[in-house]
Image (cartoon, rainbow, N blue to C red; front, top):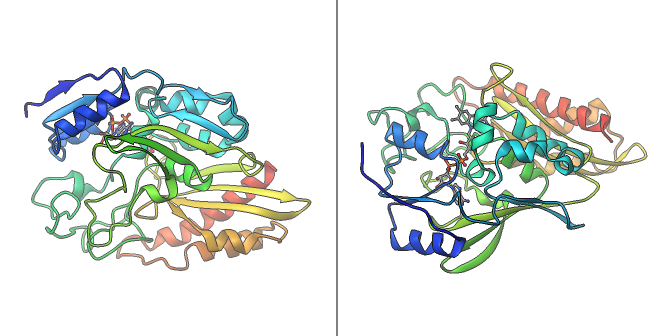
Length: 331
Ligand SMILES: Cc1cc2nc3c(=O)[nH]c(=O)nc-3n(C[C@H](O)[C@H](O)[C@H](O)COP(=O)(O)OP(=O)(O)OC[C@H]3O[C@@H](n4cnc5c(N)ncnc54)[C@H](O)[C@@H]3O)c2cc1C
């Protein structure tokens, strides 16, 4: 057991001030379902845990604005999944949440923490004898030549092929959502699509956020493209498992033709992955299964499979194709 200080700020300004004072060993704690897990595994050893759960104004879901849905970073996954506006206007977002983890976890885990969950790569979470550039920069990557069935076919590097495991960020990336943050340097807004970094040569740097930056809310633009959407998640078992391949897909049709399409991939890439070229290929066309399949193939054009995960390319193409057909049924 490593000793750590436990602090409970009353508001966001106090939280970021405390974090800045206790750097570099400070960590925010929300639901704790990632942080405590990693502390028990010895992957994280914070010297100060800053419990942000009592901060007021960060738990609510606000659907009163015409242009955006606001979701407080401390809203728990189950509340967001069950919210009437989320279910009606952003079915892919609701599905990405209720297809994640278990009911107990969803009742505890917050959406802010969900965005920042860390990879499930067994070498990252495993014993220190396994090389992992994310855990110990410069130590190597055991997954490249090891058990890599669950790893990325998109966005990997010579230093890391671990996937980003979350579901919700995939749906948020498809909807062009933003996160609002606060830090001692002020407030800023970051597109979810740009929140997570590709591993390149620095896989230990996972997001563009500074370690003391607190996510206060998520903003999701409202519009015609959200309603005809779905989150299609394929996994080894039907419940309580991470994605082998997933797709958050949204379409806006006028008549039979596509005027806007969104395709984001999960379970196959090192970060939430928007397939922009695939989306563009659909615009102006009737949404047939053949057009959907062509788009899905484009989404995986740059895939670089490893020894044990080539199946993810074929699986991913089927997943995106089926997701587009499911979204079409909702238009
Ligand atoms: C057994 C199991 C199965 C799971 N299955 C799935 C699944 O299928 N799909 C899926 O998507 N997820 C899954 N998860 C992950 C789960 O959804 C995340 O652990 C959870 O959402 C994290 O939220 P939290 O509030 O518990 O975060 P915490 O553990 O409290 O925090 C996580 C990280 O985020 C930081 N943090 C938290 N809140 C903020 C904030 N507001 N601003 C800045 N930093 C912050 C913390 O410092 C920490 O680094 C699973 C988890 C477990 C344990």
